[in-house]
Length: 234
Ligand code: SF4
Image (cartoon, rainbow, N blue to C red):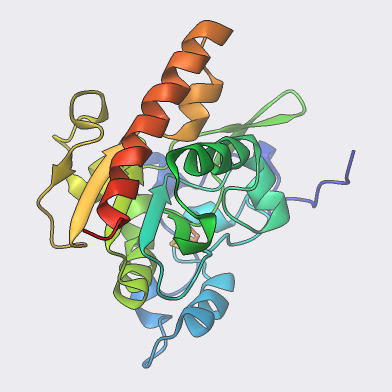
């Protein structure tokens, strides 16, 4: 077992009072003040390393910024880095990331044309025994982190934007967007020429049995297949 880096704050100290109140009180300036005047992906990624704009940085190991080509055809946006991503410092490298890689391959999307990122860049978790269990970021934390995502979108300018899971979809497409109802459909949005949503790959891993996992994987690959069709030359 690799040694887990110590969190920046002992989880036993409890959450920040402002976070309990639904805020996202960090200890640093807002993200808008951290973004370089002439942003580049490298410059923005470096600036995000020291971000303390919301409370999430405290219990996480490091900022996990988006990764992929500077002019990617496709941007995939998830909710937040998970346990493995927090330790590695890279997005979608854990079990859900490996499943995503497999699904992209099956859908015929070259991983090299894909930029992957999350709506928040620090891992939010709660202790359960020795494990760190994913906890959903609240709307204040998502709002605090949003300028990083907007800057990624402005720099990468993907042809197709894909929200992975309800948190990303509702953050980017509005709270009334229901992934269960609208997955795989393209919706009008100013964020990219083509915008869609599907499930988060971690939900497939949580399927109750092998049969439903296979069925969910087929649906996920079908959704990504619609993205692949958008990339094909006419
Ligand atoms: S989650 Fe986003 S806004 Fe909050 S500290 Fe991390 S990078 Fe900054």
